[in-house]
Image (cartoon, rainbow over all chains, first blue to last red; front, side, top):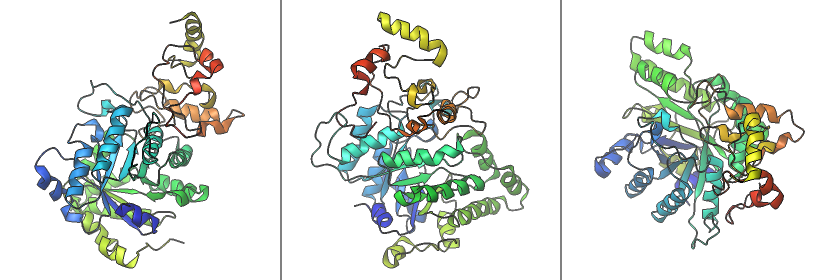
Length: 312
Length: 117
């Protein structure tokens, strides 16, 4: 059983982080990306060609993380591979002990720097989850046996802040029905959307069926916030935040404070099982954020069973 | 394309923007063809839908799934939108879904697909 699965099953607060994209530099290049926050993270996501830009493959990076003693979450998007390739990547990564999967639809090829590429989308994310569950159950999609079956811990993403807003919890429930046991929520700067999602998640029973992990994004410059607002599909940044960091004397500190404020807000909501931390620049304060939020290190959480105080 | 498929394409093309996937799910998607989604998603909207409800890929087009979700709620069988639809069988493109419905061919999911459709 993976460390992440163990923590979630035990009801401990989990911290996951998104590894900066890797292009080269060997294992040292991978290590230096998670070293600043490795004491806090239960697991680190190996991203899959984020924003439709090619990088070192998520399978290779997940295996590298494993070799370096950090637990990986293997991200798989549906954009670049058909069902055969996805099956072989899941099974191949599992051969190296990679158990945590995060199944996503993926940004379209037009969001990237090779928009002329063929988009695949042979499966959608709920179908990918169901296929991964079949693999964990001991057979390929064709029905052919897979023995011994790999142990997998399946997750997905849902975006609380994209229309149709009142369908997002239903879609998350569909992913849970397809096999998802944790959901890393898309970065959400709009507090009202996250609030509504979490309230519905609790009332619909979603929060009891899967670990819901909101994402917090840390940036260092106002232009990064603008970039996210304008260029990243499915994420809007309220003008209030952009104006605040642009007019601040210390813009970098103001950017951090936005992340901290959003993290505090997320932790105040019902049904939150942990946080997924994303920074677009090397060491933009993930460890500091955990410190300010008084989240104990992973070792302390494992030793003392930390659950974050539930908001009333 | 065989004669029946030709007739189906002529009828459903103009009405639903049918792409002749040969395994029609219009019934459960608010009579909105999911194959008009640039990502051809069969199980709901991606996370890239714009705040105005338009498509991530084609900004001038309303998201297929925003329409599907809204329309499905007006149908007596509204719950069918929640069905987990199996992956597309790519052998069925340009065949008649009417014929495949009658023969049950459109319900044949791969043996490893155990989830109830």
